[in-house]
Image 1 (spheres, rainbow, N blue to C red):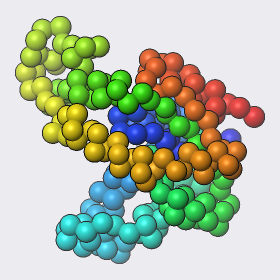
Image 2: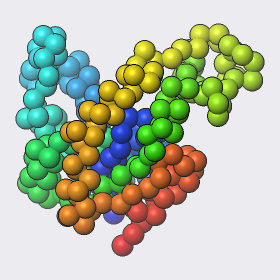
Image 3: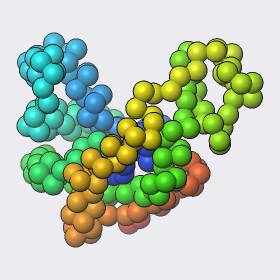
Image 4: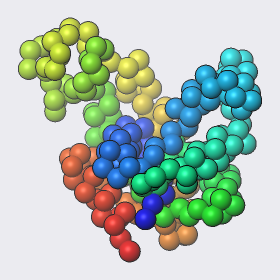
Length: 221
């Protein structure tokens, strides 16, 4: 039975990592707002042209357009074989978007089965993010404290010396992103709690432990 879920949590909580595991293990489909917008922009469809025009002007894409893109994905997913459900990542971000998503899913005969809040300690999150770096060649992820490369400056996987840090993976930028999350998105925690949809997991646990906690939520009922 397909399950539709929202992964909720601040930047760096591990939502993307867990979404990829759910895609691989349960045949679920991750709906990332950023990915959908980039895909639409290059699609050549009428919706894609609207998205491209707005993004090329440096403007923000409206909620209406994002909901329209999600609607297209809901229709495609419902028709797919062995479909495991949707993972909403990065949407909704506001109470208005949450209401719009609920209305859309009701129209499409879909339900939202769970909202999984990936809880983190802010200080630990800052340490996790600011110590992170990746291989520019193969994409392997490392950390100064918890997963350094065996040879300094060289990727363990492919031997590349092209190791990179994201420009916004610094303490000041992360605190700005966290403040934005708490101001706009954290009200969703109370919203979904009141609807009986909210479940919490420790987002800073070991990757396998977090995955097991999410699986427990999905396998309930």
